[in-house]
Image (cartoon, rainbow, N blue to C red; front, side):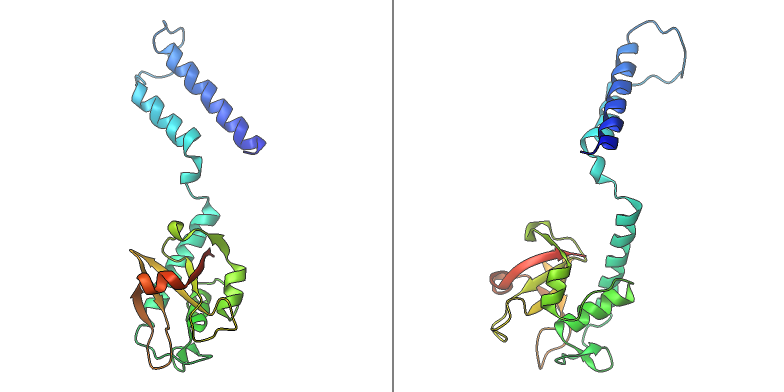
Length: 188
């Protein structure tokens, strides 16, 4: 906790403590006619002190909106054919081409390959995946590269990706097969 957060938290605690103690004392000043209940105090304490990170900063909120936009762009590419090295709806997509294209349309720059995208994103636990996060795999098709496949997590144990030659961009369940192939998850 940095000094600003500590000072803010301490001030809030002192104010809340002071308000709760004056509720039973005879007031000398009337700041408000509204009676402050214990539940109101607990709610304020909960929001200000215990869960300050629950509220996204404007920058994080903007980034979240961009990620959700990238998800909607990716969903518009459903049924577009797989093409190794493909980076556009007209020519087709490989897995990382779909990711790069979708995020670029949402004004987020990502590198071209799954391995580079893995390096660029912030590592998160698979259990912490949220819609718009990237999920990285190692599939048997390209054994010489540790991270060789990527998809966008959609929530509900589903992800969107461009799987392989002969397939199209699709939404796939994160089933046992795919769970065994996971290398990690990343947040943009």
